[in-house]
Amino acid sequence: MKKMFKTGCILALILSVFVSAVYSEPAVDRAYNYLKKNLEIKDYEKSYTYSLFLINYFETENMPSVYVEPVKTSIQKYAEFLIENGQWSSIYTILDDTKVAPSSVADVIRPYVTMADKHFKEIDEQKKLEKEEYNQQISQMINEMNESNAKAIKSVSDSNLAVAVIFVIILVVFMAAIGVIIYLLIKTTKQNQIQLQNTILTMQSMNFTSSLNTALPGPLQFETGSSDLSKPALEDKTESDISAQDKAVLANLILICKKYGDQIDNATARRNLSNRVAELVYKISLELGYSDQESMIFYAAGLIYDIGFINIDSSILRSRSLTEDQFEVLKTHTSIALNMIPFVDPKYQTVFKDAVSKHHENLDGTGYPHQLKAAKIPYIARVIHVVESYLALISSREYKQISDRNEAISELRAADKQYDQKIVEALDLIV
Image (cartoon, rainbow, N blue to C red; front, side):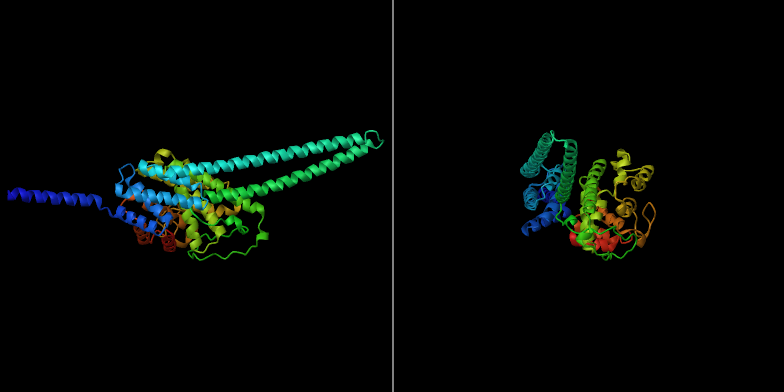
């Protein structure tokens, strides 16, 4: 009897150790604790980040019930925060992020998606009404001009000077019509600029200030090799020095880069990665003293830094293990990309070329394709290298041993021969 009791105790102890080992995952526990802590202090942006960690960790597995309610609350609060700040488009990003979550968690965002659909539908209807009103005004003006011409011609038909008068009237009307057309073109251009600026603000899933409401400098002189990350000295410009065309060029460039970023993410099956890289590049640049305008250029470059992947075989991009030959093919995306950015304005070409071709260079010269070292690596390439590695550490299934952002930062600090530590310090401050 005593032997059976002793055997039972041993079996119970082994079972308890096994259960404890299964459910004492430090990564999940810390993410859960950080989630609750940020909910308590109402930092819904960070709490949502930890919710995504839990969702991606369990993915198709069943999420333990103890995590479900905090994750649902975090998603709900973050959605309300985005709506309060007018970031409606980001609701769709949450919907995409929670596709792999349990249905009870994924369903939380659906009412907010309905609200976003309604919001954008109302905007579309308002634009439609404005367009109809604009067309009616043009039609009315044309009718009035035709009536005026008909009356003028009739009034001079019996006069010996009829031909001369008609010519003068037609000339006056023609000049007036040109004036009206020029006025409408100017008005439409201003409306398009405002619409483009608002579109950029809506695109951004994080809350940062748009540079399009402030003066843009002339041709920007970005550093290409200095390791000094202090704010570069640029010639001061006033608002009157900045043309509307310059603002429109930057706004349109960001929109084009956003579309290419979506194509890159589709080709690589990396959910929303281009946008996340760009947002962190923007925030780090501000933290390091770059102006809002320069940081927006870096943001645009961050959207398409992997544009070369679009012309790489998708089977290689999505492979979990690569042969040596496949890896060599993959590395060519940095050179392919140089021929894929003709749409970038000449004044920004240097920054974009550095971003797409040099973001795999390491400080110690072990990177590719040029084995550049330290100060010879441009800032934009260094910051993208840090951000891309950080996001891989906290989100990729191959790095599940990295428990949270703190350990990811520690990994980057330890690799000081690869990553610029000033950039890593700035990243630590903002995430």
